[in-house]
Each structure stands twice: as C-alpha cells, then as structure tokens.
Length: 396
Image (cartoon, rainbow, N blue to C red; front, top):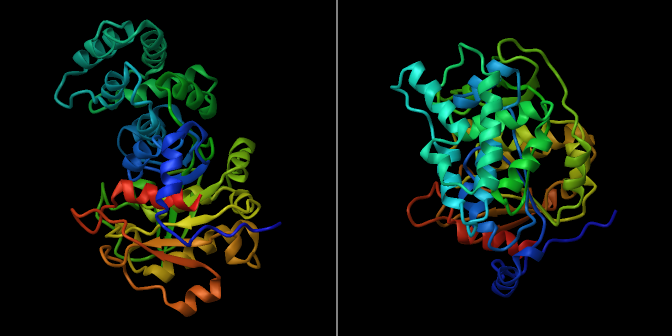
C-alpha cells in the first residue's frame, strides 16, 4: 500500500478552497468520526464546498430524548443522526426552515399527558401548524412516520420534552424493520442532505469507561460531564457494553457499507468534540482500524482548543497516544502511526491546550503538526467554522 502524503505546504490554500466552492457537487469525500453537536456549524459550512462528505456518528447516546426511546424500544440512539442530517440539509430547499423547526421542536415540559398525545396526533394527521404548510411530498412521509411511532408508543412513554425529529426517525426505524441505514437514507432524501450520514454500527450498545483508579462508568451520559458531575479521574480505556445498567462486554463489527465509506474517503478526520463519547466511541467497532489503515488518504486529528470534561488528566501527547492505542486494538500494535494519523491541526496562539507536542514526539510518530489560525475571536473553546473548513479542504 502506498501512503499518499498530505498537502501541508500551504494551509489554508485559498486557490484550492475557492475551486471547491465553485463546484461543491464535485467536492472531496471528507469523512468524519463524530457525534453530538460539536460539528453542526462546520457541517453547515461544509455543504458549500462539498456535497460528498461522510459522517459516521455514534449511536451510543444514553441521555435526554434518545434515552427514552432506547428504553422504550431497545434501539440505538438517534439524536446524533438527526443533528447531523439537519446540519447537512439543503439550505436552498423551499421547505428548509420549516423542516428544521419541525425536527428541532420539543414538546412542552409543562403540558398534561392528554395534551401531549393530542399534539402528537395532530402532527401525525398533518393538522399541526408545524407540518400543515409543508409540501405534500414532504408532509405525507413525515406524518406517516410520526403515526407509526404514535401507534407503537407504549402507554407509559414520557412525551414531555420529546424531540419531534427523534420521534420521526424512530417511526422510520420501526417501519423499516428496525434498521438504521435505510432509515438514514430515507431521511437524507427527505431533507435533501448534502452528504452521507450513517451510524457507525446498528446496535443497541452502551459505552463503558474504565477509569485510572479501576472504577467503571456505564453510559454516555455519565461520561460527558453534562447531565451529571464531570469525572474527577482520567479514563484509562473505553469499551462497549450490551447493557447500560451492568457491564456486559460486547464487540461490535463494522458494517460493510461503513467499511466502504472509510476506504473510499479522500480525507479522514478525527474532529473536535467530546473526545471519548463522540470521537473514540466511533473507533471501537472491529474493523475500523483496519479500514482506516487500508486507505492511503490523509488522516487528520483536530484536538479541542478548550476545556473538554472527558479529557481530565490528558495532555496533547496523551490524547494522540490514546487515539492511536484505540485504533491499534484493531490493527495490532505493530501498525505504524503514519498509517492511522498524518496531521495534527492546532491553533496554539488562540487555543487553550493542555501540554504541547514537541519535535521529538512528532518525529518518533512521523506525524506533521500544522499550527494555523482556527479559533474564533469569541473564545478559546470555539473554532471559527470557516477557518476550520478551509484548513480541511486545503488538505484534501
């Protein structure tokens, strides 16, 4: 296998970026392992440069609206799929703003169960203001999926705070023989997504973090530091469990479609976001590391420029080492770092990173460090989406 060296001589490359902007339908296949909302802004910008990006997202979310659906139907989480599909939805489509409002709408917390069920029925029948003005070609399938969900919903299902977009996708999942990929394809067609979005695997599994002191934490929502207090001990290892209540070790296998998407990418990105529950979670299935290794395209890691509660006790060299260790579980320890990672993108002037990457560390791995303006003026924890997209497009 011949490794193609990434283009690192000029980042950003204004000529290259401008060329992609002029013909986004022919843009490069940038592939992202991510989850949550960290890449939402970047994804909205990406569609202006490429309609061919690929997003493999985690189905292991165990909090919020996704948790209620998982408990009721024994299914993977849908929230990250919904978020990324809407970020890639065609902004020029006539119904774009209405569809975004519908998918983002949450049922009120203060309403009675009777009122909530009446609202859901009005939505499913097409009588609610959120759906009544949609074109029939869009309204009918969305209402049909809501009706499938409504009919299957357990009598005890908690609708307060439920995200309508998640309920629509759940209906599509239940109607489609409980498979995520066909549901994701159908949803992408409905919202005219400019890119491919898939769950990295189609399993009802949970994250299991083993801490440095030997304790084990089960469930994504207990790892992120958002719904419960953040961890006070570094994570030593991340695995999958068949249960969110007791640790039942399990291995997920990368689907063939996901493998093909990885091996055909023009650039592979380990993007910013929750380091363990969003990025590394996607790298756990068997076959991921080998698929990445077998693609000679550039592989880019973009560390968070600010505080991530999951990174307690980790500096930049530790993050790089953990990323490589996770991938080498699948490839074997003798896999060279350059087959899994080529470039690390940082903004040392404006970002707030723990530790630094010295020349000896980088030389030992054979990895290139690109230090370029990426961070927004409003604070060290936020990337400037335009700058980040321009840097990635320059490397593709």
